[in-house]
Image (cartoon, rainbow, N blue to C red; front, top):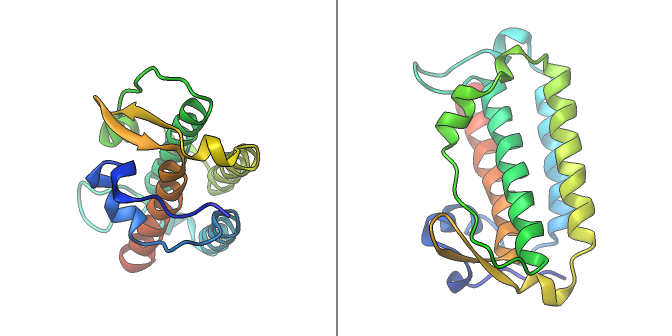
Length: 171
C-alpha cells in the first residue's frame, strides 16, 4: 500500500491538501471521489452549473474545469517524476488557465465525461508505478522538491478540498 508522504517530500504549500488524508488506499479514494463528484454534479441544474457564489469566483463549470486541469498537470508530474526524468517542471497559474479556457461552453455531460476520463487515466497510471518509483523525487515550480507519492496524495487532497467548497458554497 502506498503510504502518506513525509513533509520533506513536498513543498509546504501542498500541506493543505495532504493533511486531509491519512495512510489510506488512494485507489479506493480516487474511485470514491469520482463517484461522489459525478453523482453530485449529475443532480444539479444548468443554472447551478453557471452559478458563482460571489463576483470574481469560478462557476461550477470552471471549478470542474480547474479539477480537470489540475489533475492533468499533476498526472504529468507523476509520470515525469516516477519515470526518473530529472528535468524541472514549471508551475502554472490556475487563474490564467481558467480565464483562457472555454469550460463555460461545455455541457454538463461533456464536463462530467471529461473529468471521468482524466480520473481513469490517473488510476491506470498509478497501477503501473512500482514501490521504488513512488519514492522518486523531482523539481517543480522553480525548484521545489516533490516525490511521486506526494503528487498522488495531492491529487486526492486537492479534490477533497474543492469538493468541500462545492458543497458549502455552490450547492
